[in-house]
Length: 351
Image 1 (cartoon, helix red, strand yellow):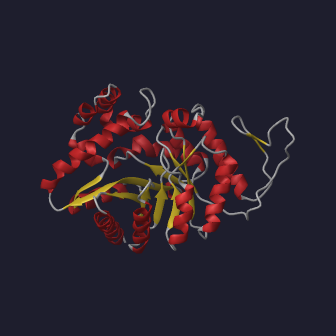
Image 2 (spheres, rainbow, N blue to C red):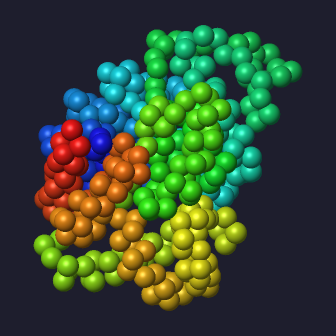
Image 3 (cartoon, rainbow, N blue to C red):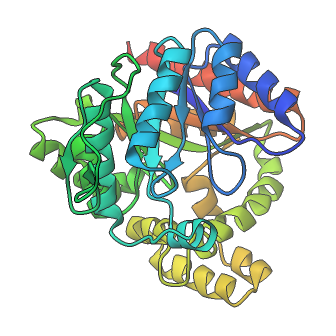
């Protein structure tokens, strides 16, 4: 398995964030994804990190549909690919109605169609040919206007496209069109029915198999000395999980809640959502059992984390995205280094 991490910039911590990424590359990390939610954008830090790194791949994790036109996304991807010497990966996500409609004022409807057409358009732009596209969400050039087909002046470049998807239909689209899948909320023991069969359906449509798709999964990693430390760490993680189940979206549209529900936690996920929507944050967190946290993270003793990584590998994960815990930069780098070492040892054992 390859190793990866995800960073997200915010005011005041750019120096530490850059140091973290530079040191992560020295540790042998393969990929660094830069997140974009409702804080900093992804492309700006990626351009800076391209100049501060030499080897690791850099990806947008993710650029949100609707916040930019497909051609602007393609321009950004091509620019970053050339800036980084071919090290850029384009990660795209549909986001959700709260962010798109509540923050950007862009309709969330028809996300599946917009995702398909965006991928098709950016790939055409990558070829360097003049762009002419007629879809149901996008038509280029604009009909009835004065424009004619154009091409970008940038040299053509092939940029791998990763899709961050959770719903069954979006997963099928990922299998059909993408080079990689940026997943989350992943329980390896339940992943076959929840995620992988849907990816397979799309892969079949494009004449491919799972070996043609990079399965990139992420989770917090926190390696402790002994199990006596776990109750406090697991307890502190429950509020974050409750936010995913109850606050990442709206009362009727929450893809994280749906994903956990498909993996055997439907009753808990529904109760947590109701409590969270009722503004009972503490009550929502209290409903989450320890097992639910441990199932979707890499928290535990070294032996426990090694076993979870083996389960991820057995489920078909090809890139593990590590979110190292720690109150200080050295602590986070220590967790990251230990995670990288465990992945390397697991791969060596498999050989």
